[in-house]
Image 1: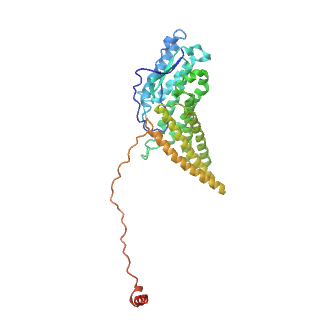
Image 2: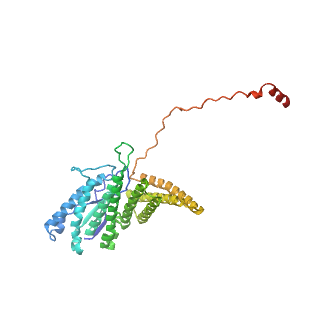
Image 3: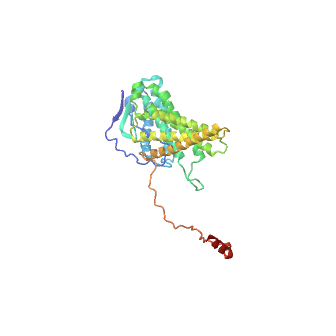
Length: 386
């Protein structure tokens, strides 16, 4: 029993990390991958065989499915389907939802069964490091974290622009945007449950030994990220709506600033030394600055509706701040995209084609000297000049 935090494992670190993950609307950290567990050996003498077999079957299915999904979830893809035609993300999510109630039997009423099994997980960001703990609450937290990451992956797929039926520029449908908000709220709920209901069941020492991707600061930041992106989508829909007032847009933008600020406060001081962790920090920084640009913009527009000199002056200051934050957000976006693994391909601008200039000036010639300068008038002027 006990726990082993960040234990190196031989032969597990050769999985190739993607150098480019394509288009990203929602940044999703690496998935946590469960390692096989022999329930029969640990529980055979303590619980009925039907329960042992059920736990084994459900978790084995998850191990296989996560192993497959971890290879594809970071690639840019519009749809990934199983042999049965359904979404692998949805199937895996359902498998986790089926497993969780059975797993909770191990911790029911403080049962000593919660310490009988050593659960081991790795993160796809570094499969050479394995964290194993003899505590079923660790397994519960890992399952909820995985459910949240799958939800964020689903939201990302919904928010990637698709070719419209009319063949015009790719866009995200209103239906997809509305569905993504519901998914963001679910993801935030899974993570909030970890903080409020699972962490209190772990000792202080065990919480300190959790892998960094399960650290409380990361879990809180991810939950706030989901809420912040949900409000971001709501603001985008309000902008597209003729009925949404400036006051509504400002309120949404200001709410978004609070979510992203709290997310940044939770994650910026954590030791996220790997590339994905640093990229996650850059994503939150970008979205925070972008949110401030929107908030100051709409605040400035409302202030500008005032009839006093003071309100106009404040409006100008707010709009200037919005412009500065917009410039900063573009730099932050670029830093995020360029951080490994890159989230878009950066190419040097091609040489412009050399076209002949089509427009030429009309030819203009000076007019002849006015007749007033001819004859006697001219002679008298010339003689006078002498």
